Length: 446
Image 1: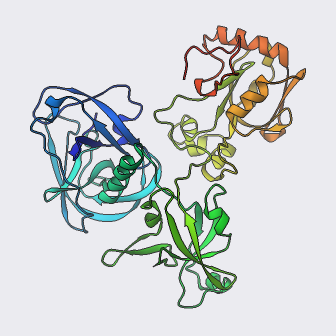
Image 2: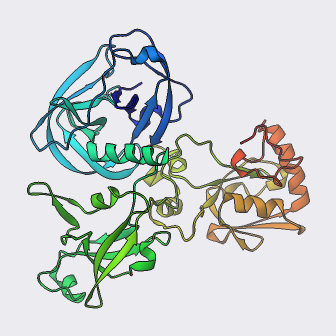
Image 3: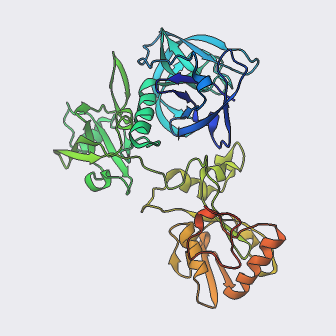
């Protein structure tokens, strides 16, 4: 349940978390008892936005669209309109803008610009417009846990970036990243060490994502001085509006995929102007799995899955402290080395005679299969299914080893699947033209 509003082109804007994992969506306009079927045109989980369309002509009768405005200034009043819990009629809550800065989006776990207001945003408000004058200043999407009457709205630049991406490519295109981690250079000693003159400001490049274009251009220990001609301060901020500052990541996120930017760096005491192509980058361990079926592969009762943050969240609200420490550290900090890479883990063991004694080896990463380094779950599946040796060996974390007689394990797999009433030994995304056989036949198709 959530709220939404109409924009030009007969489209409805709402939050991604309102329609996440949807199977069927109904919408009802204010003042009408009738519900209409809606189709989800695009979903951006990182920015927590979604676009819906409604085919029914009756729904659009007498409907007016709202125009998008600008980012409100501090202390300007906005009105949040929606259908929060506690009633069925429309609700209007007024508040003033208290802060504009990059904020962690709870739904997509992404840092993007957000507007903090002193108006309550309750369940059901999500997706509703924040109105300033006669235009939309943002989309209500979350509140601050543990605080009263502090809510957040998604600002117009983020909404425009999402909508323009959908209009150009027909689908959600993602928000760009430079693919680097930076350290502030506020200490004079670190600035002197890297040859920064007194008038220079910038940040120290500490890590670079191997999949980013910056990996070919930048080097560790470069000092990033400017982004597209905008000077970067020693704390990583750039000028924003009137006497406000914002992290330079915002400038990066507003770029369209495959756009280029000119960055000025200080390297070994010399200044260089470099051109970098920007694109959305996926983390090694996905932070969410919305609108996707889980991937898995079962062999001899061993359940193999790619590591994801939702898997770690299953360890409870305090998952950071209760989940396996090594997996948690890798999920949050490790960078991918190549495209399509996954960390494959043994999540659980379905007990059988074939795997007795191995039941304590769950929650460990699978490093190698028969001496071959595992790239992703599909790669592991192909190695196992194509095994021609008598023994099958899995090398895990902590130097743990699993050895199975391949033919016996293959026969045991079908027995274990039948016992646990599991229709397929692998998820549909792992099937290919040669992949299925008698023991691992799927119950459905892609």
